[in-house]
Length: 419
Figure 1: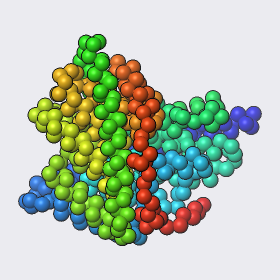
Figure 2: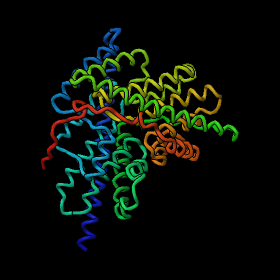
Figure 3: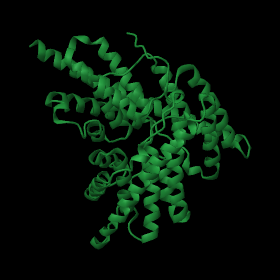
Figure 4: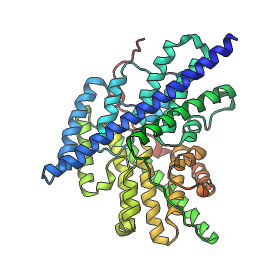
């Protein structure tokens, strides 16, 4: 009876934690959107200055550099957060406010990054703190941080099943949660996602990504999936090459402030010349869908490559965040270009290219497809799964995966948790 009571109580705490997770994500994105609206819509309408984008990016990146110099090089990249949670079943929480600020400021600046890295670190730390306060649940607490991470990913990407599958895909059977713990995962994800959607509806917020329709094509045209998949893999190669190049370049500079300013300068210049390369890409996808035909094949491909390049420059320079949203945007842009070039359904081309690109980077075909369900129709799942599986099977050259290490770039203040 005591065990059943504790399990029930732990389930209630999990639901509550999921709701709090959804509320934090909603509040973070709300503040982010308000800040972006003021900085990039309201202020420019009142200030007539030809180099506004460059000026804002330079000043903002300088301030972010000073912030990092004081508080540390946060937020950590999503892969690092997930690796720590997987290994230790916990995440440091003494500096959550500093991480929250470090995650928000580059997004306000228009950096080509997503919010998932910083938010996942904050929620993981919060869950670890809660776990430390609820020690009487013993073994279940080891999964609390993992459960919080799953709820965060499922809510940020508006894809509950992605949040559940992404951290688990590729794990050994012995590492997978047992049936009763799976229930806890799903409870947290559903409560987080439900709270987020509910708050969005109450405040009239946007649901996020636009839906991309699939008009259908002739069966013979499905053969185009092969070169489209290879294009997605090629874009993955470019991503890894830009990742290596950006980290090598930024490794030449020891000052975190200088690195941030260099990243801000690149963001300002590229953003002035090609505005679609700025921000996470979540809302810019709508611009591609509306104006892609007028933009043209060559420019859409250039935008895709610039997006991959700028994302890596931002992250390597210190304007850090997630890479999923920008990479999805790059896949959409390149896929639309292919549609214009070969004359078949745009939704089909975008789905195949993006699924191949994401899967080649993640090496997780199922999670990649679940992630993209926030954009594409269910009828495209079979072809996306096929493209994702092939792209995952194709290896990335080892020389693209090796990233030069630089102590100054990676070190952060000593992490000492306090209860």
